[in-house]
Length: 268
Length: 142
Image (tube, rainbow over all chains, first blue to last red):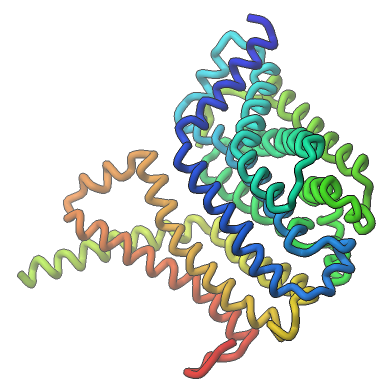
């Protein structure tokens, strides 16, 4: 079997799982739409106009909904990666390792499959956000999708590394849950970097500057509102390079782990 | 009749004690959740305070503290559901329903255990809220 065909087959494995989650996707879509149309409006209503000086003139509502979309992208990537923990429980990882497939292809295929599933899952939500923002430029939509895919690859690789290092459902549950919540809080998804700087909590500021979620959300904002570039610490090229470097680095680590360290069994 | 009731209460009590013991076994999860509640209060509270319209919400920390407490009620209630889900997957539920106790006592025990766990978890959050906002009165707290 050719390498590309192998990758396709593995990626399809992950995509197939989405078919069983139609109700879940519909519920998530409904919840997200309510969050964007109702909750985000309420939050932006209690925010004073002072915030405009921190967002480069971008209305807080628009700032917030792009942050919410980034959070959704991040959480969905976490869930897709975490599904491998369930597979370990059911012995599917052992089955995969016994297949006549090179391990590096298996690793890349799983990451690709999970990331494509994430994008497929989040496309309706992205379209809702872009509809509300009035974005109809196809180039912006395509660049957003591509950058979302690259970002998702990094997060999925990260979770796969955690799942395989822990080899324990309970421990993975705790660690992934904590990382999931903490990284979102220590980022610029809900408040702009100058507001974090003004709070005077230096460790929080440093965490937000280096957080890949901050880079992803700021990149989406600059794509739609170029004036946001004025308050972002880096330009769009630097932001996307950071995301690409983060994702490629973690993908290489995941491949390395699959090839050299991963053994069947030992799941607790 | 009274024998049946006392037997029901005793069985439910035993089941709830099991859940309480298991609660302390998940100490890291618990610590993580408490840390997250405090992080919500500190991060959301301190950061958001500087951008919230003071005419609408004069003190955002006082505003968000009861909200975080409510969130912790939800989380604590959720832990027992998460645990029952894990037990279903690992077929521990088969063992539980095979025990010489009535199913109603099993359900009541799990609910009682969940409530007690929630109360323990929630107490820390309420103490924190009292420290920040003082004791609640019959008229108001916020």
